[in-house]
Image 1 (cartoon, rainbow, N blue to C red):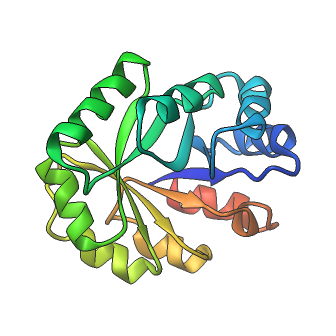
Image 2 (cartoon, rainbow, N blue to C red):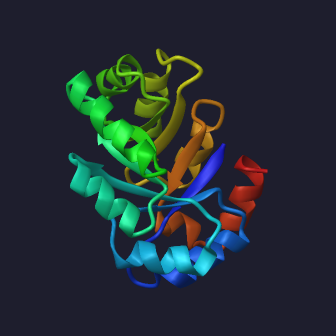
Amino acid sequence: MALVGLVGSEAPAEDAARLHELNISALAFAEAGLAMQGAARATRTVPSLCLSRVSDRDGALAARYHGADGVCIDATLPLDDWDRLAKGARTMRMLPLALAESREGAEAAAKVGARAVLLRCASADEVIEAVASLPRALTVVAEVLSADADALRRLVGHVDAAIVPPGVHKSAQFPALVAEVDP
């Protein structure tokens, strides 16, 4: 399972450089902004994901301007709206991820033809339950709100990637966790 480090706004360049040294797969940001730009300059090769919900072309443009390589589009949008935003994101050289916050949202992501979904849930168990009915070809990135190391371990084998909150990736035990779940 790939680990995606959630970078805060306090010291984004330093956090990004540290996570890059630990071979983190990607960086995530709560929203597009200067923190994302600073981290992008510090690493240059690590992809960045904007976790805020993009609801229009301007939101996607702002994310790309600040260095996003992936954006989250609400999976429950009408098919035409989702498709238009996803195509727009791809033309900007970004991966459109369908943002889902429930099992129904995850199933909606599959129905709109998403290739990747960001599944945001309160617990690892909710994520595991939600992904059970999804097609295997759909790339699933899990964001467990208030996740700890144990929650991340439970996701191994169920999702392709998981967002790692700062409280976990700043701990002294994080390098061991990376070696364990993302060898």
